[in-house]
Image 1 (cartoon, helix red, strand yellow):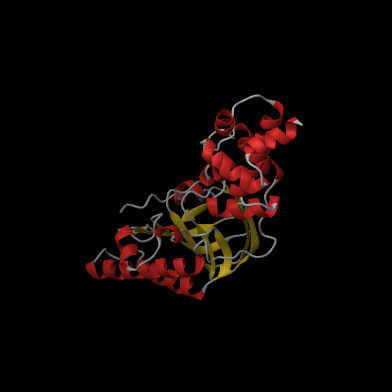
Image 2 (cartoon, rainbow, N blue to C red):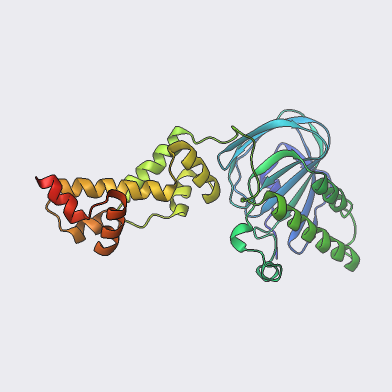
Length: 294
C-alpha cells in the first residue's frame, strides 16, 4: 500500500535532512524545522512526528483542539488522516524531527479481523505534545533505516516495527482511549451556529452525525463530545428535540395532516412520528393538536 505523504507540502519552513525511507504502508522522513508558521494541510495519511533533538515551543490546532507546549526530545504528535491542522507555529529551531507516515487504517482489514479489533474503534485521536518513550524508541529504530539499502532483512524489520507502532497507537491513542487535558477543547460560536443553522434548514431530511461533524469541520467523535459540552445534549437528542418543537408548532398553527407534518419534520412516517412524539410529550400528535385547539 502506497502512503501519500505530505511533508513537502506542509513543512515549508524546514528541510529534509536525508532521503526518505519507503516500505509497504510506511514512509520515514527526517526533518530540520526552522521557526515559522506552517500552511494548513489536510493529510491523506496518518502522521506521527517525534522530536529527536532540539527544543521549541509548538502550537497547533486541529479537530477542535488547540495544543501548545514546549517540545523536547521524545515529544510526540499524532495527526490522523483527514484532520485539518491550522495555526501551526514553531517558535525556534527543531534540529531533528522524525516523521512517520502510515495508512489511514494503520492495520489492514484482514489483520483487524485476525486480532478481533472492532474497525470502528481503530480510529486515532488528534493528540500531541506528550512524551511517549515507546514511540520515541520506535522512532529511533526507524531513523536507523534511513540511508540503508532496502534489503529483505530491513523490510522485515520495518514491517515488524510498523506493526508494533500501530498496536501501541491503537492501544493508547484510539478515540475511545485518548483523553485530552481538561480545558483543551472548545466549540467556538461560529462553528456551533453553523451546525445549528444546518439542523434548522434540514429538519425534513436525514441528518447523520457525519453530516453535522462535517459542518463543524471536526471528526464525528470530537464533534459529539464538543457539541454535548456546548449544548448539554447529544447531537441525536438535539435534532430530535428540534423536530418535536417544529412538529408542535405545525400541529398548533396549521391544518396539515399528521402524515405531512411527520414528513415535513423528518420523522419519515406517521407511525415513527407518533412513537417519538408520545415518548417525548406523553401525548400522541392528535391529542396534542386537540388540546391546542381548545
